[in-house]
Image 1 (cartoon, rainbow, N blue to C red):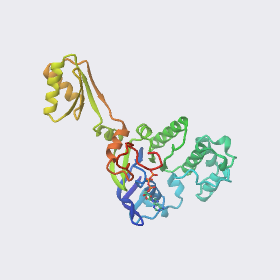
Image 2: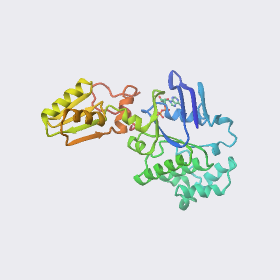
Image 3: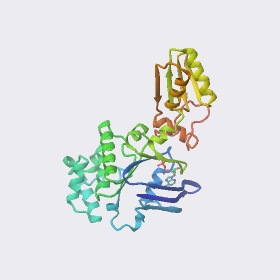
Image 4: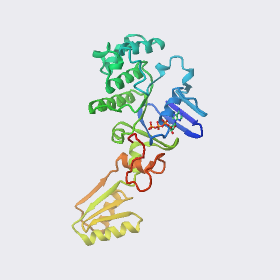
Length: 317
Ligand SMILES: Nc1ncnc2c1ncn2[C@@H]1O[C@H](COP(=O)(O)OP(=O)(O)OP(=O)(O)O)[C@@H](O)[C@H]1O
């Protein structure tokens, strides 16, 4: 369990994390989302005691990181995969970490096997590809068999096999009852991996809810109705509009309805005696739901006149 209470961090005049109060629970994957500069990394750094809060607290299982006797046994993290001495072998790097946390040396070989690096354990980390570096960082996070794990953009630069591997690893870790807190800009991946979503913008909490709830709350979800009876369909349309439901007439035989569920539309069609050839729910994607949620809090918005929906910043969303 990670508990943030009134967590606040300022850099000069800018507030990077703004009065964040939040519990990240065990037994599920919590996705941590937000536009560039929203404060995700700063939040994670405060949990690890790498940045000092200006106000509030960040606790791991009720304790501040700094007061943990063997921190790696309590919380494992992948923040920056490049934070490894390039001249050290993968095994030497992990052995040094293990030694400083009272972790038996045999655990090093176990985690090397878990992340698939046994064959290159004797190679210097500086020669590793991006994907191998990420795996080594994850091995370090798993070393102390901790109950709490945090990963900052773990799939960055990974190939599809690597992405799938990380997804399965996170799901397994959560199923084992651990707290898994993971930031990402890849919405499609988060939709597959996370159970719960925390979205922040400009350092403030925007949403803390199950993924399914976030998607269901999007106005981009819709119900499609097709009928061979244009007159009946027009009557259905009028009834829905009278209920303040948004209806788009695709053509005389098809409607796209937002703000009503399949049951309501089906019941009304039945009541009006309209024959239907299709009644289907079209779910919004997490990406659509996310863009709606954050549209008012992008730190970097496109200058007026530009068509790009992306924030005008070099990094990809
Ligand atoms: N050491 C620092 N000194 C000054 N400003 C900082 C520092 N670290 C972060 N910031 C600022 O704090 C804000 C939050 O940054 P942070 O890296 O936490 O966001 P993020 O959500 O992780 O962004 P991204 O998705 O781009 O990684 C940004 O405006 C950033 O420029």
